[in-house]
Image 1: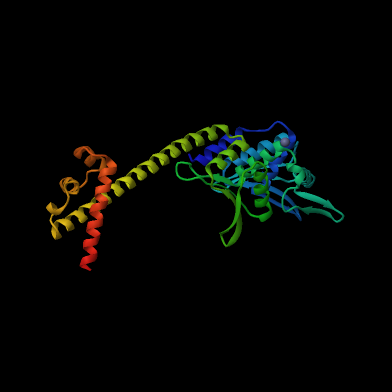
Image 2: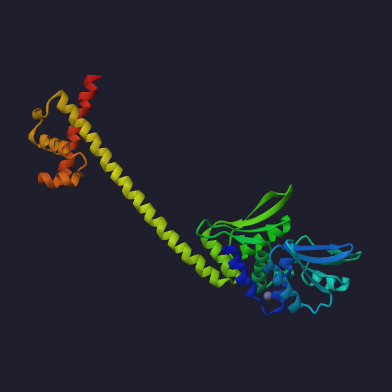
Length: 311
Ligand SMILES: [Zn+2]
């Protein structure tokens, strides 16, 4: 089972006790997978997956005493919940802040009214409902990505705004799906995704997520260290290669025995051990590292002046 599926199954068990929270979560679920119309009145929650369907059923039963709730499992076509009595449809929709009464009758809202998510507990419940109905999270072993896919911009921005109130910075982008624009509220930062799991109350998933994140961080740190050591080694080797070239040039043009004794010693040590470090040579000759370094610089000057005189 996917990491996303595990998170959703955990959230299914998380049912608030306060009615305001049940309604906030239901409101988000209707926004994510509801089919709503007023002419004629219709309220249906349709999901591909069993988990959000079960959650919607629980919320409707706990928050409302409905007589006209129809459940349906369409083989291969998902699950649906339908309320058939018009007064009950209005009761649910207005409780969820999804319709407004006007002088001419009822009007659909583009996103739930603000009062639905006034309380912090209800904001958490709303984010939980939105995730159950429209969200997914990638396996953290692969990459960090959490998203909510919604059909209207106002709904995507509402999720973004609510996350922002918990200090989570999500982005909204438009994606093209089946020749239709959809809106994706997403985040890619590991620690912020962990925050979202915490906000929704999926604590077991949060622990798993953080375990994986720690292992990944340590692995990255080790990789960085190894790369850094490899780069150091590269530098040592390329310095040694340059020194060897300088010495070969001097040997060819002047002969090593024309060099002062100190320089000749270092030159011979380098030719004898092309991959020795400065420290190795310093130990071998019994002189300080800076002394060895100084003598290589002198050899470099001689080689450079030979190159110049040639050109
Ligand atoms: Zn609440």
